[in-house]
Image 1 (tube, rainbow, N blue to C red):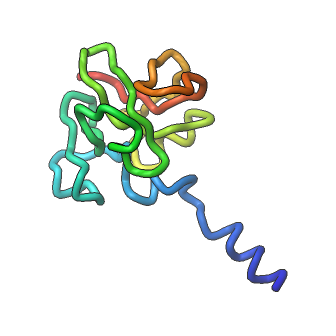
Image 2 (cartoon, rainbow, N blue to C red):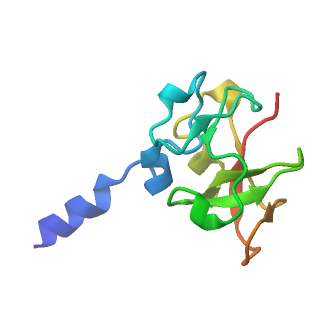
Image 3 (cartoon, rainbow, N blue to C red):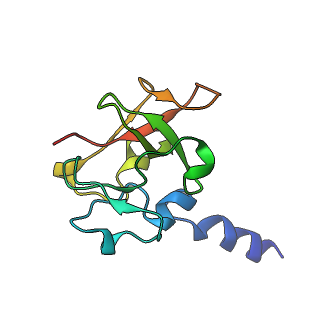
Length: 119
């Protein structure tokens, strides 16, 4: 039983469910995004697999939340603790930042989300 627990703890090297689903991954076309509800958002440098125009966290894949972006649109952005969480599926030149300077559409307002660089 101990070996099974140790294996399960080490199995998820990508961080969270949203990373497994490709949320926040860089892309050039929607077909590269893992979940049918996601699209390749080309408003961001390197593209960003996510959901645009969310109105609630329930609109977002698990491990992401609905954020009001400063461009006037809402997006499902990957939640994070630090910058490394944001870049599992992104190249160095297109890194996203783990930011607390955001506004979540729903409470609670605490926490951070991966904000990709705008084009």
